[in-house]
Length: 178
Image: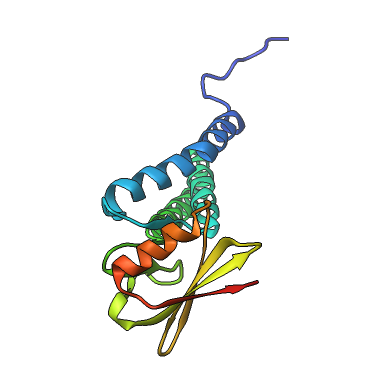
């Protein structure tokens, strides 16, 4: 009995390598792309929703599946692989352009559902409510005439620093406990 060795790499092994490689790479690609191309130099707060990270990872896994399907020999399977790759690029593009940041002009948000940035200027904001938890700021509620935008603080910022920042912008603010 003669054993034949295949020169073709194992498809499962390639898929596993691509999938495991994309998990950390997906986070890094999203962070660096937004840091370089989206967030301006002077940002008070910036945030990328966890939903964007998850969609980015799903897109990377779809690319992996599409490439692996593309390696198979039947035409229809290759077509499905190509379609998976195209869908993955749309998902990754959407995830790269999902963010929130607050700068000197106002609040910039780009939700995952749409590819358009929404800007709320400081002139349109009536009041900012600093929500406190045991005297520590937890979130900011930006109230305009027709909407309320809630931003949860990711890192600790002293109350005095928040007050000075809001005074510098020229926005009225108040505080309330949770």
